[in-house]
Amino acid sequence: MTNKYLNSVMATVMARNTGQTEFQQAVKEVLDSLEPVLEKHPEYVEARIVDRIVEPERQIMFRVPWQDDKGQIHVNRGFRFEFNSAIGPYKGGLRFHPTVNASILKFLGFEQVFKNALTTLAMGGGKGGADFDPKGKSDNEVMRFCQSFMSELFRHIGPDTDVPAGDIGVGGREIGFLFGQYKKLTNTFTGVLTGKGLEWGGSLVRNEATGYGLVYFVTRMLQARGTDWKGKKVVISGSGNVAIYATEKAQQIGAKVIALSDSNGYIVDEKGIKLDTVKRIKEVERGRIKEYAAEHNSAEYHEGWQGIWTVPCDMALPSATQNEIDKASAETLVKNGCIAVGEGANMPSTPEAIDIFHDAGVSFGPAKAANAGGVAISALEMCQNSMRLNWTFEEVDERLKLIMHSIYDQSVEAAEAYGMKGNLVAGANIAGFVKIANAMMAQGIV
Image (cartoon, rainbow, N blue to C red; front, side, top):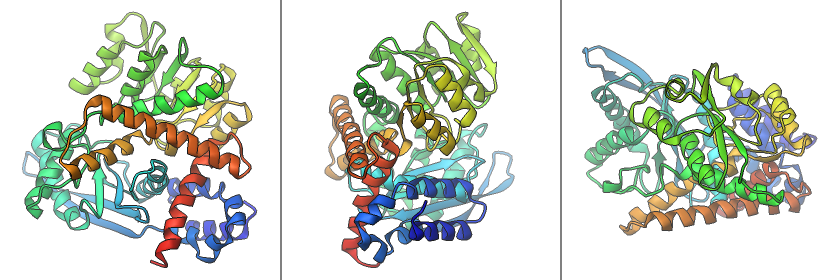
C-alpha cells in the first residue's frame, strides 16, 4: 500500500492485535483494495471510517463451564465479536472447534461485515464460538455445553441486536440446544438464531445454501469466460455441508466432481463422486472420507488433505478451511490447467496464491462474495420468522440465485468503476465497503 492513511491504520491493527495473523491477513486484504476509493472519497478519511471499521464495536469473552457424562467438570472459553451494525443487526455464525481463538473469530467477523453488505440485505457482521470440540461427545454433553454457553451469550443477542447462526461444529443439534436455552431464559420465541429446524422456524435450502450459492456465483464467472460446467472436472476440498451441496449442484448441471477431502486425507474418483455414499458417511454415520474408497473400487484414498490440489482439474472449489491453498498449491493448479477457483470456505487462499491465479488469468471468486449464500438464506429465514411465513424450496432457491447474481454484478461493477476491471477480490471489497461507509457517515460518530 502506498496510501499513508491506510498504512497507518494497518500499523495500528498490527500493534493492537499482536500475533493475530488471520485477522491481520483479512484486514490487509481489504485495505489493499481501498486506495482508489479513498482518493475519490476523502470524506471517508476525514471521518476515519477505516479506523472504525477495523475495530469491533463490541468484544465479548466468557468462560463456559460444563459437566461431562462422568461427572467431570470442564471449562472452555466462549467468544462473540460484534463487529459492525451500520446496516443491520450483527449476523454471523458460531464455531465450536478446538482451534477457535480471538484471531480466527475476528477475521471471520470482519469478513462477515462485507459479505453481509454484498447480499443487499439488512445485516451487520459478527462471529462467535468456543474452543469446544463436539466430536466424540454424547448428545447430553453437547446439550449441557450449549446450555452453559447460551446462559452467558443470551444477554448480548436478540432478533434486532445480534442473530447468530451455525458454523463448523454447530449444526442442527447444537442450534436446537442453543435455541431451547435462549427461549427458556428470555421467555420469548423469536428468530434469534438461524439454521433452526423446519418445524420451529427454519428455512428450506439452509443446508444447501452455501454450496448452491457457490455454484451460482461461479456459473457467472464461467459465463464471462464463454463456457459452463458441462463436462468440467471439479475438485472440491472438504466434505461438510458446503462441499456436499456444491457437489450436488455442480453434478446437476453437468460437471464431474472427482475429489473430496476431510482433515485426514482425500479421495479421488475419476468416474465421478457418488454423492449418496458421501452423504451417508458424513451426514448419517459421521464417518471419515476414507470409508468411501472402501466401498467404491473406482476411488483412491490418499493420506494428508493438502495433496488434493495436485489432482488435475478444470475447476477448484476450496471449501474446507482458511489458507488451504498456498503458493505451491496454486502453481500446481495453474500448471494442471485449472481455469476457475471459487472459494467455498472463508479465506482458503493465501495472498500469494491469489496473485498467482490473477497473473495466470484464472477466474477467481473470493470467499466474501462466492460463499455468501449461507448468510443470505439466514437473512431470508429471519424474514420468514418476522412474517410468520414459510416459503417453498423453489421460492427460496430462486431468491438465493438472484442474490448470488447480484453479488457478482456488484463486484464486477465496483472493480471496473475503480480501475481494477475483472478483479473480483477488489470489487467485492469495494462494493461492500462503500455501502457500509455511507451508512456510517449518515449515522455520525457512534
